[in-house]
Image (cartoon, rainbow, N blue to C red):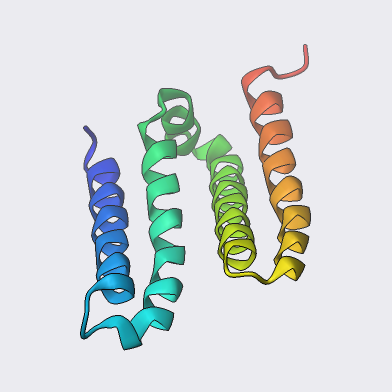
Length: 124
């Protein structure tokens, strides 16, 4: 496992565990808001670990000419993850206006899909 993958995976899992401790452990329960906030970067770290574990993404990232594309892909993937987290947190929390997060979720996921497909299948 490449060191970047291990680092982002460890950060994501560690922050997720800390988030759950802050949300559910008696005595720390008054810090629930903090647990809800720190789970957001945990999702981004886990998404980055997933991307960096994919050989096609690592090729994009390692080549100087395609590094900007790799950065855009990472930003779109993290934006989709963040939108999904906010959507689920809002809806599960009873705030139905959170369903509006489906718009940036679909935009970021769609942008990622289009860019990924263009990159992996360049026009002839």
